[in-house]
Length: 132
Image (cartoon, rainbow, N blue to C red; front, side, top):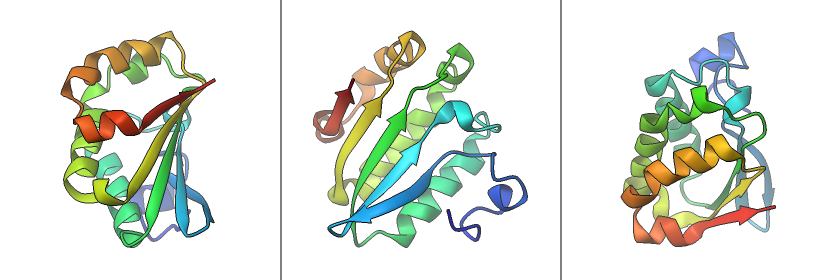
């Protein structure tokens, strides 16, 4: 991850979890593992981090992988953060979003998804794929 994207992560790289991991055929692949973020409750910092990084690649198609490994109820309770991220994506970056892959889904993630599902834009909803 480019450290100039997020000052918080510059000082503590474990703060947020959203990074570009590769580019395949001009499609940027981003990865998130909420349980790996030490500042998973830092809503404004996370939103700025995601927005700044996506903005850097705004002309490219992109895929977002969300990893549920070690995701717990403390992470699920941050449902407001994911709702705001999804609102940002819907409003600003949806036209280039190819897919959201959810891997290693567990009960806590299922709980959170159940809460946000009714609020999902139909276009975003059809891009979500659950991978086992």
